[in-house]
Amino acid sequence: MALTYSLSSTLAKTPKLSSAKTPKAILNLLPTKTHHHHHLKLHSSTSTPSLLSLSTKPYTPLKPRRPQTHFQTRALFTGIVEEVGKVSHLGSTKDGGFDLKIAAKTVLGGVNLGDSIAVNGTCLTVTEFTREEFTVGLAPETLRKTSLSGLKAGSLVNLERAVQPTSRMGGHFVQGHVDGTGTIVSKEREKDSLWIKVKVEDDGLLRYVVPKGFIAVDGTSLTVVDVFDEEKCFNFMLVAYTQENVVIPLKEVGEKVNLEVDILGKYVERLLSSGFVESIKSR
Image (cartoon, rainbow, N blue to C red):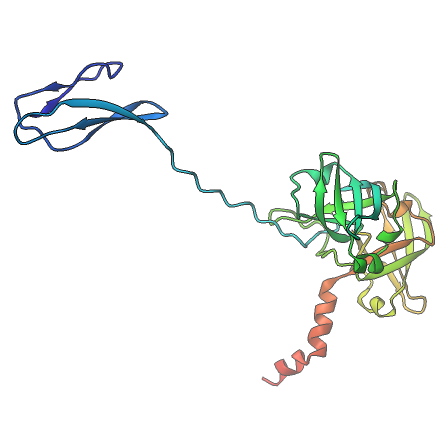
Protein backbone atom coordinates (compact mmCIF):
# COMPACT_ATOMS: atom_id res chain seq x y z
CA MET A 1 0.00 0.00 0.00
CA ALA A 2 1.32 3.52 -0.82
CA LEU A 3 1.46 6.25 1.75
CA THR A 4 -0.43 9.54 1.39
CA TYR A 5 -0.82 12.21 4.04
CA SER A 6 -1.85 15.82 4.54
CA LEU A 7 -0.20 18.49 6.69
CA SER A 8 -2.04 21.07 8.78
CA SER A 9 -0.64 23.61 11.22
CA THR A 10 0.56 20.71 13.39
CA LEU A 11 1.48 17.08 12.82
CA ALA A 12 -1.44 15.87 14.87
CA LYS A 13 -3.20 14.20 11.97
CA THR A 14 -2.53 10.50 11.41
CA PRO A 15 -1.11 9.55 7.99
CA LYS A 16 -3.57 7.64 5.78
CA LEU A 17 -3.02 4.35 3.93
CA SER A 18 -4.02 3.82 0.30
CA SER A 19 -4.46 0.57 -1.62
CA ALA A 20 -1.10 0.69 -3.36
CA LYS A 21 2.00 -1.30 -2.42
CA THR A 22 3.82 -0.51 0.79
CA PRO A 23 7.21 1.18 0.19
CA LYS A 24 10.17 -0.01 2.21
CA ALA A 25 11.60 3.35 3.40
CA ILE A 26 11.76 5.78 6.23
CA LEU A 27 10.19 9.14 5.51
CA ASN A 28 11.42 12.20 7.35
CA LEU A 29 9.03 15.05 7.84
CA LEU A 30 10.25 18.61 7.98
CA PRO A 31 10.76 19.81 11.57
CA THR A 32 8.11 22.01 13.13
CA LYS A 33 10.45 23.12 15.93
CA THR A 34 14.00 24.38 15.75
CA HIS A 35 15.26 21.98 18.40
CA HIS A 36 13.83 18.65 17.13
CA HIS A 37 13.51 16.63 13.91
CA HIS A 38 10.41 14.49 13.51
CA HIS A 39 10.98 11.12 11.85
CA LEU A 40 8.14 9.14 10.32
CA LYS A 41 9.00 5.43 10.46
CA LEU A 42 7.32 2.77 8.33
CA HIS A 43 7.59 -0.88 9.40
CA SER A 44 6.51 -3.34 6.70
CA SER A 45 6.39 -7.09 6.10
CA THR A 46 5.62 -9.27 3.08
CA SER A 47 2.36 -10.60 4.46
CA THR A 48 0.50 -7.78 6.16
CA PRO A 49 0.78 -4.00 6.20
CA SER A 50 2.69 -2.62 9.13
CA LEU A 51 1.59 0.04 11.55
CA LEU A 52 2.86 3.59 11.15
CA SER A 53 4.44 5.23 14.12
CA LEU A 54 5.49 8.86 14.54
CA SER A 55 8.48 9.22 16.81
CA THR A 56 10.66 12.16 17.76
CA LYS A 57 14.25 12.34 18.94
CA PRO A 58 16.32 15.33 20.08
CA TYR A 59 18.29 17.08 17.39
CA THR A 60 21.98 17.28 18.25
CA PRO A 61 23.69 19.97 16.17
CA LEU A 62 27.20 19.39 14.91
CA LYS A 63 29.85 21.02 17.02
CA PRO A 64 30.96 24.13 15.12
CA ARG A 65 34.57 24.38 14.14
CA ARG A 66 36.50 26.83 16.24
CA PRO A 67 37.17 29.93 14.15
CA GLN A 68 40.78 30.80 13.59
CA THR A 69 42.03 33.49 15.89
CA HIS A 70 43.26 36.73 14.41
CA PHE A 71 46.97 36.53 13.82
CA GLN A 72 49.02 38.79 16.04
CA THR A 73 52.57 39.84 15.59
CA ARG A 74 53.97 39.42 19.07
CA ALA A 75 57.39 41.08 18.94
CA LEU A 76 57.10 44.11 16.71
CA PHE A 77 56.19 47.65 17.70
CA THR A 78 56.06 51.03 15.98
CA GLY A 79 57.42 53.32 18.67
CA ILE A 80 54.12 55.22 18.79
CA VAL A 81 53.24 55.24 22.49
CA GLU A 82 49.60 54.32 23.13
CA GLU A 83 49.38 55.54 26.70
CA VAL A 84 51.37 56.36 29.79
CA GLY A 85 50.88 53.85 32.60
CA LYS A 86 51.74 54.03 36.28
CA VAL A 87 53.82 51.47 38.16
CA SER A 88 51.85 50.06 41.10
CA HIS A 89 54.37 47.42 42.22
CA LEU A 90 57.92 46.37 41.47
CA GLY A 91 59.64 43.65 43.45
CA SER A 92 60.62 40.04 43.99
CA THR A 93 58.18 37.15 43.88
CA LYS A 94 57.94 34.11 46.16
CA ASP A 95 59.58 31.86 43.56
CA GLY A 96 62.59 34.14 43.18
CA GLY A 97 61.40 36.07 40.12
CA PHE A 98 60.87 39.78 39.67
CA ASP A 99 57.47 41.24 38.80
CA LEU A 100 56.37 44.61 37.50
CA LYS A 101 52.71 45.60 37.90
CA ILE A 102 51.35 48.56 35.93
CA ALA A 103 48.01 50.37 36.04
CA ALA A 104 46.70 51.07 32.53
CA LYS A 105 43.56 51.34 30.39
CA THR A 106 44.15 51.44 26.65
CA VAL A 107 46.64 48.57 26.36
CA LEU A 108 44.31 46.30 28.33
CA GLY A 109 41.82 46.32 25.47
CA GLY A 110 41.77 42.79 24.03
CA VAL A 111 44.75 41.71 26.12
CA ASN A 112 45.43 38.00 26.68
CA LEU A 113 47.91 36.08 28.78
CA GLY A 114 51.18 35.79 26.89
CA ASP A 115 50.67 38.97 24.89
CA SER A 116 53.58 41.36 24.43
CA ILE A 117 53.50 44.93 25.70
CA ALA A 118 56.42 47.32 25.39
CA VAL A 119 57.18 49.06 28.68
CA ASN A 120 59.55 51.98 28.09
CA GLY A 121 60.57 50.23 24.91
CA THR A 122 61.17 46.84 26.53
CA CYS A 123 59.15 43.95 25.10
CA LEU A 124 57.60 42.12 28.08
CA THR A 125 55.10 39.28 28.41
CA VAL A 126 51.80 39.66 30.23
CA THR A 127 51.55 37.07 33.03
CA GLU A 128 48.47 38.41 34.83
CA PHE A 129 45.91 41.12 34.20
CA THR A 130 42.68 42.63 35.50
CA ARG A 131 40.49 45.39 34.15
CA GLU A 132 42.74 48.00 35.68
CA GLU A 133 46.31 46.67 35.61
CA PHE A 134 48.62 44.02 34.23
CA THR A 135 51.72 42.19 35.43
CA VAL A 136 54.90 41.32 33.54
CA GLY A 137 57.94 39.34 34.64
CA LEU A 138 61.44 40.77 34.50
CA ALA A 139 64.38 38.48 33.78
CA PRO A 140 67.81 39.21 35.29
CA GLU A 141 69.17 40.11 31.84
CA THR A 142 66.31 42.59 31.36
CA LEU A 143 67.16 44.27 34.65
CA ARG A 144 70.84 44.48 33.68
CA LYS A 145 70.29 45.73 30.14
CA THR A 146 67.50 48.27 30.68
CA SER A 147 66.61 51.10 33.02
CA LEU A 148 63.55 49.30 34.41
CA SER A 149 65.33 48.44 37.65
CA GLY A 150 65.23 52.12 38.52
CA LEU A 151 61.43 52.25 38.50
CA LYS A 152 59.38 52.46 41.69
CA ALA A 153 55.72 52.61 42.68
CA GLY A 154 54.26 55.73 41.09
CA SER A 155 56.74 55.88 38.19
CA LEU A 156 55.22 56.65 34.80
CA VAL A 157 56.08 54.44 31.82
CA ASN A 158 55.43 54.43 28.08
CA LEU A 159 53.18 51.57 26.93
CA GLU A 160 52.53 50.08 23.51
CA ARG A 161 50.92 46.82 22.42
CA ALA A 162 52.49 44.70 19.69
CA VAL A 163 51.22 45.65 16.25
CA GLN A 164 48.81 43.57 14.19
CA PRO A 165 48.92 43.10 10.40
CA THR A 166 46.13 45.66 10.08
CA SER A 167 47.91 48.31 12.16
CA ARG A 168 49.32 51.44 10.57
CA MET A 169 53.09 51.77 10.76
CA GLY A 170 53.27 55.26 12.19
CA GLY A 171 56.84 55.08 13.51
CA HIS A 172 59.50 52.55 12.54
CA PHE A 173 60.27 48.88 13.18
CA VAL A 174 60.86 48.55 16.91
CA GLN A 175 61.51 45.07 18.31
CA GLY A 176 61.38 45.92 21.98
CA HIS A 177 64.89 44.49 22.38
CA VAL A 178 66.74 47.22 24.23
CA ASP A 179 70.34 47.59 23.00
CA GLY A 180 71.51 49.61 25.96
CA THR A 181 70.86 52.69 28.02
CA GLY A 182 71.75 56.35 27.73
CA THR A 183 71.87 59.25 30.15
CA ILE A 184 70.10 62.56 29.61
CA VAL A 185 72.81 65.24 29.68
CA SER A 186 70.80 68.31 28.72
CA LYS A 187 67.27 69.64 28.17
CA GLU A 188 66.69 72.95 26.40
CA ARG A 189 63.52 74.75 25.38
CA GLU A 190 63.01 76.30 21.93
CA LYS A 191 59.56 77.88 21.84
CA ASP A 192 57.10 75.02 22.47
CA SER A 193 59.60 72.29 21.48
CA LEU A 194 62.14 70.55 23.69
CA TRP A 195 65.73 69.65 22.78
CA ILE A 196 67.10 66.60 24.59
CA LYS A 197 70.68 65.37 24.44
CA VAL A 198 71.56 61.81 25.42
CA LYS A 199 74.94 60.25 26.10
CA VAL A 200 75.29 56.62 25.00
CA GLU A 201 76.89 54.38 27.62
CA ASP A 202 77.93 51.64 25.19
CA ASP A 203 80.71 52.92 22.92
CA GLY A 204 79.80 50.49 20.14
CA LEU A 205 76.16 51.55 20.02
CA LEU A 206 76.74 55.05 18.69
CA ARG A 207 77.88 53.80 15.28
CA TYR A 208 74.28 52.76 14.53
CA VAL A 209 72.98 56.26 15.30
CA VAL A 210 72.94 58.56 12.27
CA PRO A 211 71.56 62.05 11.68
CA LYS A 212 67.96 61.96 10.41
CA GLY A 213 67.81 58.27 11.25
CA PHE A 214 65.43 56.46 13.58
CA ILE A 215 66.03 55.59 17.21
CA ALA A 216 63.69 54.38 19.95
CA VAL A 217 64.14 56.20 23.26
CA ASP A 218 62.12 54.60 26.07
CA GLY A 219 60.07 52.99 23.31
CA THR A 220 59.30 56.27 21.55
CA SER A 221 60.15 56.42 17.84
CA LEU A 222 62.25 59.55 17.32
CA THR A 223 64.34 61.16 14.61
CA VAL A 224 67.98 61.84 15.42
CA VAL A 225 68.99 65.43 14.67
CA ASP A 226 72.74 65.42 15.29
CA VAL A 227 75.39 62.94 16.42
CA PHE A 228 78.36 64.11 18.52
CA ASP A 229 80.95 61.37 18.21
CA GLU A 230 83.54 62.96 20.50
CA GLU A 231 80.96 63.37 23.27
CA LYS A 232 79.35 59.99 22.54
CA CYS A 233 76.03 61.83 22.34
CA PHE A 234 73.11 62.45 20.03
CA ASN A 235 70.14 64.77 20.30
CA PHE A 236 66.53 64.96 19.20
CA MET A 237 63.62 67.37 19.46
CA LEU A 238 60.18 66.74 20.95
CA VAL A 239 57.22 68.72 19.63
CA ALA A 240 54.50 69.85 22.02
CA TYR A 241 52.15 66.93 21.30
CA THR A 242 54.84 64.31 21.93
CA GLN A 243 55.84 66.01 25.17
CA GLU A 244 52.29 65.57 26.46
CA ASN A 245 52.04 61.89 25.60
CA VAL A 246 55.36 60.28 26.57
CA VAL A 247 57.46 60.12 29.73
CA ILE A 248 60.78 61.43 28.38
CA PRO A 249 60.12 65.13 29.19
CA LEU A 250 59.31 64.15 32.77
CA LYS A 251 62.80 62.78 33.32
CA GLU A 252 65.52 64.96 34.73
CA VAL A 253 69.10 65.47 33.58
CA GLY A 254 71.13 62.50 34.80
CA GLU A 255 68.31 59.97 34.51
CA LYS A 256 68.60 56.95 32.23
CA VAL A 257 66.59 56.06 29.15
CA ASN A 258 66.34 52.81 27.19
CA LEU A 259 67.78 52.86 23.68
CA GLU A 260 67.08 50.65 20.67
CA VAL A 261 68.81 51.50 17.42
CA ASP A 262 67.36 50.86 13.98
CA ILE A 263 67.61 47.14 13.21
CA LEU A 264 68.28 47.86 9.53
CA GLY A 265 71.70 49.28 10.37
CA LYS A 266 72.66 46.04 12.12
CA TYR A 267 71.62 43.95 9.11
CA VAL A 268 73.63 46.11 6.72
CA GLU A 269 76.71 45.84 8.94
CA ARG A 270 76.30 42.08 9.16
CA LEU A 271 76.03 41.70 5.39
CA LEU A 272 79.08 43.86 4.76
CA SER A 273 81.22 42.04 7.33
CA SER A 274 80.23 38.62 5.99
CA GLY A 275 81.61 39.26 2.52
CA PHE A 276 78.18 39.39 0.95
CA VAL A 277 79.02 42.37 -1.28
CA GLU A 278 82.22 40.71 -2.58
CA SER A 279 80.32 37.53 -3.38
CA ILE A 280 77.84 39.52 -5.44
CA LYS A 281 80.61 41.31 -7.36
CA SER A 282 82.34 38.06 -8.22
CA ARG A 283 79.31 36.62 -10.02
